[in-house]
Image 1 (tube, rainbow, N blue to C red):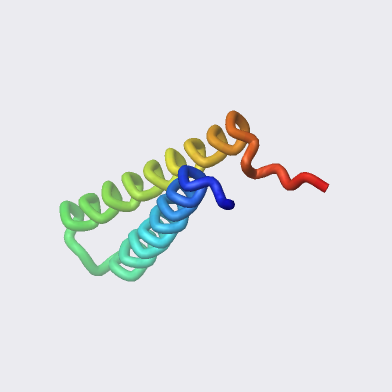
Image 2: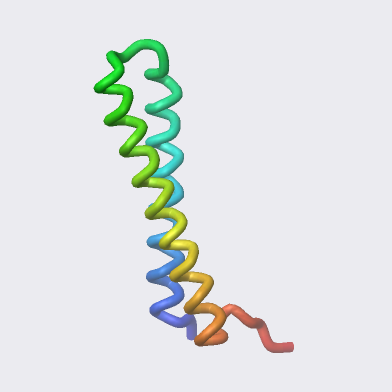
Amino acid sequence: MPCEERVRLEREHLEAGIACDEARKRLESKAGVLARGQYRLLLHASKNAADKLESARAALDSHLREHGCGVESS
Protein backbone atom coordinates (compact mmCIF):
# COMPACT_ATOMS: atom_id res chain seq x y z
CA MET A 1 0.00 0.00 0.00
CA PRO A 2 1.53 3.34 -1.02
CA CYS A 3 2.32 5.96 1.59
CA GLU A 4 -0.39 8.65 1.35
CA GLU A 5 1.99 11.41 2.48
CA ARG A 6 4.52 10.40 -0.17
CA VAL A 7 1.81 10.44 -2.84
CA ARG A 8 0.67 13.90 -1.70
CA LEU A 9 4.24 15.26 -1.68
CA GLU A 10 4.97 13.76 -5.10
CA ARG A 11 1.81 15.40 -6.47
CA GLU A 12 2.80 18.76 -4.98
CA HIS A 13 6.29 18.40 -6.47
CA LEU A 14 4.88 17.56 -9.90
CA GLU A 15 2.44 20.49 -9.79
CA ALA A 16 5.20 22.85 -8.64
CA GLY A 17 7.39 21.67 -11.51
CA ILE A 18 4.66 22.31 -14.05
CA ALA A 19 3.96 25.77 -12.59
CA CYS A 20 7.68 26.59 -12.65
CA ASP A 21 8.02 25.51 -16.30
CA GLU A 22 4.98 27.58 -17.28
CA ALA A 23 6.28 30.65 -15.43
CA ARG A 24 9.68 30.35 -17.14
CA LYS A 25 8.05 29.97 -20.56
CA ARG A 26 5.91 33.08 -19.97
CA LEU A 27 9.00 34.99 -18.89
CA GLU A 28 11.02 33.86 -21.91
CA SER A 29 8.22 34.59 -24.35
CA LYS A 30 7.81 38.15 -23.05
CA ALA A 31 11.48 39.11 -22.84
CA GLY A 32 12.06 42.28 -24.83
CA VAL A 33 8.34 42.78 -25.39
CA LEU A 34 7.01 44.01 -22.05
CA ALA A 35 7.71 47.21 -20.20
CA ARG A 36 10.33 46.85 -17.48
CA GLY A 37 7.77 46.87 -14.64
CA GLN A 38 5.65 44.17 -16.23
CA TYR A 39 8.72 42.07 -16.97
CA ARG A 40 9.83 42.37 -13.34
CA LEU A 41 6.44 41.08 -12.23
CA LEU A 42 6.87 38.02 -14.44
CA LEU A 43 10.44 37.60 -13.20
CA HIS A 44 9.20 37.71 -9.61
CA ALA A 45 6.50 35.14 -10.40
CA SER A 46 9.08 32.89 -12.03
CA LYS A 47 11.38 33.12 -8.99
CA ASN A 48 8.44 32.36 -6.68
CA ALA A 49 7.56 29.30 -8.74
CA ALA A 50 11.18 28.12 -8.62
CA ASP A 51 11.24 28.60 -4.84
CA LYS A 52 8.04 26.57 -4.47
CA LEU A 53 9.53 23.80 -6.60
CA GLU A 54 12.66 23.76 -4.46
CA SER A 55 10.56 23.62 -1.27
CA ALA A 56 8.40 20.82 -2.65
CA ARG A 57 11.50 18.83 -3.61
CA ALA A 58 13.05 19.36 -0.17
CA ALA A 59 9.83 18.25 1.57
CA LEU A 60 9.63 15.12 -0.57
CA ASP A 61 13.31 14.29 -0.04
CA SER A 62 12.97 14.81 3.70
CA HIS A 63 9.91 12.58 3.88
CA LEU A 64 11.59 9.82 1.90
CA ARG A 65 14.66 9.97 4.15
CA GLU A 66 12.73 10.05 7.42
CA HIS A 67 9.90 7.66 6.55
CA GLY A 68 11.86 5.29 4.33
CA CYS A 69 8.93 4.76 2.00
CA GLY A 70 11.10 5.50 -1.04
CA VAL A 71 13.33 2.50 -0.43
CA GLU A 72 12.34 -0.66 -2.23
CA SER A 73 13.07 -3.86 -0.32
CA SER A 74 14.33 -6.88 -2.19
